Image (tube, rainbow, N blue to C red; front, top):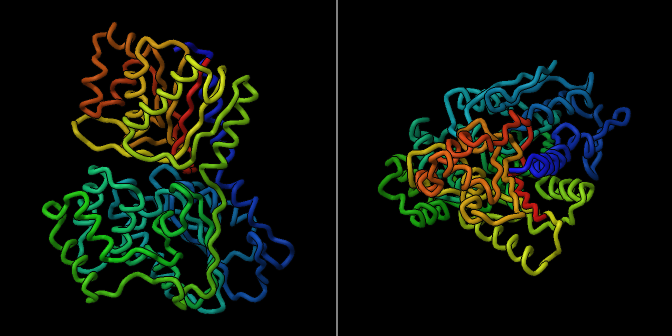
Length: 441
């Protein structure tokens, strides 16, 4: 890939990333004016609270908590947050606990249980400020008895591998958990609760981001059973998980709190950052670099391979007819695709999308693509995503690397690693899903 094109793609992506910096996102929506705290359009008299606590979970939660700690200053009593390993920051009054993501682990179970116990000590004289971001669901793996952590881990793995959407995955997570689906708010009641969300979900539905810990849950145990049936998981899920879901559907286990429940009477939920904000900033950078930008959608979802073919098709149409816009142009899309695991390889949804795009672009000039996760981690790899263009497959074949074989084995990481076409940002401490940038020159 031409180095100038690669630099342009990376600059556009990084501009989007900068726009969703978690610390700045919080500061845009939260302000302390003397003894009053403004959050969005609401205001809270700080002298009216005995204790002010900060909590939350997610890959971008540490910088969000840092902003809250600095804004609250001497009025902050204490705090406890959970972040992904290596995503922590040194904070003064807020305890930072690290745990596993995307696979929940014992550290997450212990940290989430600890926070729930602290929230249950809250009274109506307390103000609880929550910072939730992508990854918050996996980082708070509390369990409904008699489930074990290993059973929840297996359930999570099966749902990730079968191609379930984040909405479907989180619906089941909520109903196996003591913290998700409004249950943080239930634990903290009757305290006043204010939750700030950095959205990593299509359309920014509050009940899905981090599995909506302080949000009424519209999903039910019956919905969970439909998801299990849809993906043919009845025979593979742990018996204890199926038994719990069935009992819940029969009304033998209390469902998650719903709209109208008194536990939400003093709860404010607010989205402070989203994929859409990142797309607008990326478009501005593309324009500054001389490309006519077009934001397709922030609702992109589906199989990564199929999305790649659709985007490449748009790029080819532009080179031939100038529709929907004339080159030089930058097509931008955001969202979160899925991958159905078919092989034993290593990769992530962005790298898989880029590999499928590379195959579709073979020997087609003038089109280049970058697909990357805003959290800096694509699947279980150290890459955020990958670059691809019409020369990618030609270079691979010259080195004896078969692109189709790597795609069939879901081995996109090793494919791009050998070509030097991975994007590695390290932990970004933010997460608003993925950005896809297609340059047509």
